[in-house]
Length: 117
Image (cartoon, rainbow, N blue to C red; front, side, top):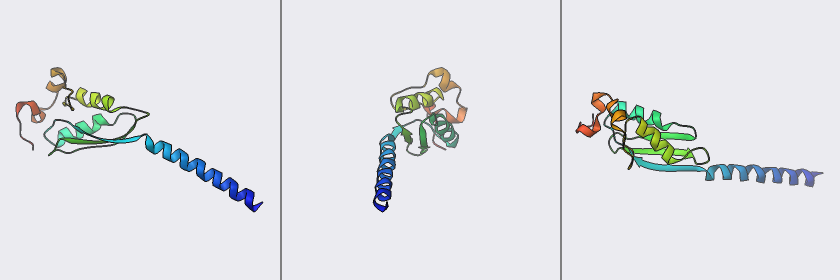
């Protein structure tokens, strides 16, 4: 009886750890360049990043670096970048349309040479 219980416990443990390992393989961390100048931009960029599957998004005002952690079975970095671009911010090689860019507040118009603030 003791051996059977130990065997069942071992099988259960292996099964659970295999599922956890498989889930972790799908979690990806990436860095992207997203244009912006201020804390308002930060909030907008991070908000636009949080689509289904995104676990973490943080944009650095000084470096324009966006750190993303996401589940690759639920989304892709391209979908996340498209959401950001739609919010008016250029992301990597993707450019926001003039219509989306023009919706940004005046203080966030990074293309006009406004300094970081």
